[in-house]
Amino acid sequence: MSERRYGEWVAVRRDGFVAELVLDRPKAMNAVSSEMARCIAAACAALSEDRDVR
Image (tube, rainbow, N blue to C red; front, side):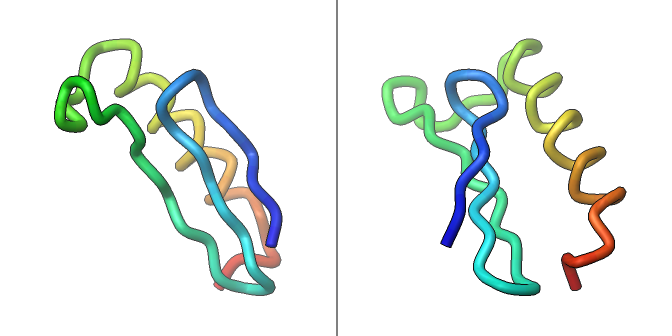
């Protein structure tokens, strides 16, 4: 399993063809700030270009 971070609160965990988008901002109960939204968008853009993710 591999993990790539996008900012402080967003990570993508990969295991083979499966990718999991992880939100980890427990102090704010995962409330989405503008910065966190940009990190989510960056992670999703990277995932959309990854041909190994099903």
